[in-house]
Image (cartoon, rainbow, N blue to C red; front, top):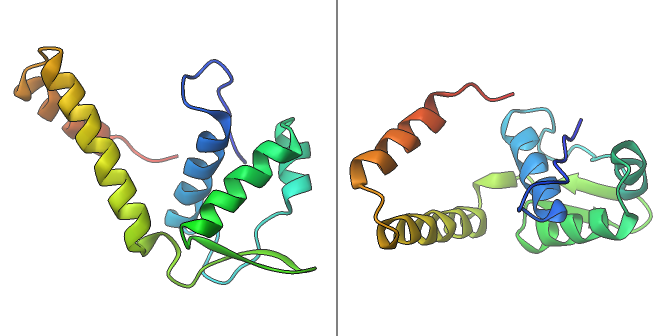
Length: 123
């Protein structure tokens, strides 16, 4: 279910977080539905349990998921529509655009890239 690129510069736990958020956005995981266990995700992806645990902890800290002791992790009713996720994403976009500007990337090129990314179909 998760596709991890071990050669990516994006940390693996961030890739896990981002893909879970995407699956929630696409409706694969509905509000209040149970997520696969940390151990099963680790086994399915071939990743360390602590890596998955970190991703789940970050998602819980952001209010995307919640956990019930002895029962597992569940999608929050607000899911990805909370302000923490939005603010973090906007901060990341801002930093990337500022970095591109400093490196001389023209505004038109940034806009073209954004339009290209938003026109791609999600998997």
